[in-house]
Image (cartoon, rainbow, N blue to C red; front, side, top):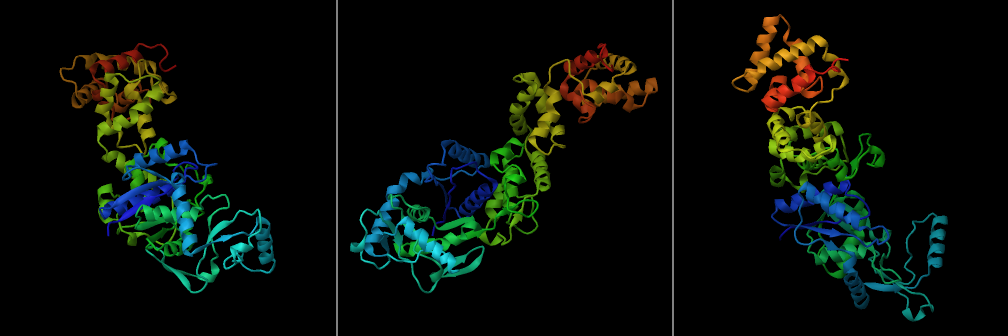
Length: 472
């Protein structure tokens, strides 16, 4: 049997982190087995579904690298097919028309509550002759569900789960206006799309019982179910807006890499021994439903930051430059020219060692691309005393005469000046750092000077050495 999975989000908002993990698990399972991963947009709620939400879902999946096979399916566009199946069940016997009015159903529910009974449809039209139908009442179509025995789900995560059939009522398949219900639409779509494995959040577990009954009524094989525990916040409560950013686009905006997010989401509820850093190729190789735990997982931003730092350090410099250039252009307020971009490329190896996210990386890299004269932060400004500026002027003269421009040669000249003037190296290096970066912190200052290049380095030093405002 060829494995076919699906991700079926409702486009009523962004792609939240729980949905992204569901998509990832389905994608990995399909790729592991050489099968298909399909996408269905469950857009039957026309009042809340928006094209903007659809676009964000597609964009989020593509950013994560979770590309689907074939075209995305619109559930709403298939509503006639859903209705067709309901009418077929009606003709064949497993479904019936129910003429109970809204008022009758409300009275039934109130009576059941008052008697302390479970609230469910009482089957009043299940075996009744349609000739008794009241005039002017548009019927719904209900499934004639089994009333005895059990419905059993052999869940790949939750294990064997059962429910007594008398606990379930005859669910509505078609509403009185002819529109299909969610339960009917999902099952028909999964059958027509050939879905073999339904991997989703365990908040859908109760739906599985009714859906299994509907599969049986239609005469289609029930897919393999795997209901994954939900993601909780750091406090152990169900993840909600109060826990912070929930949409995948928010994590992208916060500077997380897609490889980081896939790795992190994979480890939220799935394990392979003690492995923490799992590249996507290994994830495909190792993924199995048996590796999913039964307990809810907790999001941990400290772990996410740590993992992102690892992925940033392992990402090629050129790729990181492409990622942060748009962020830097917003910071500096203009497009980067070729010289600035070249400095960024040269400095990236040192910059990426310290960054936990792309925003931090861009912030730390900004000094490489800023226009002269640099703005100084307060601590850098305090380093640029009159004596320091005089020292910087002498450094500029020395560096201008270098035959070779590299980190070792620059450091040798600065150390030589330090020794000849009896000044500790730090007393020179810190003002030099301020002059070259506008800050009191940076990668190694001789490395910085080498990457800035001769002309830019000397120009920045002389800007500060001749400025009357420095150190003021």
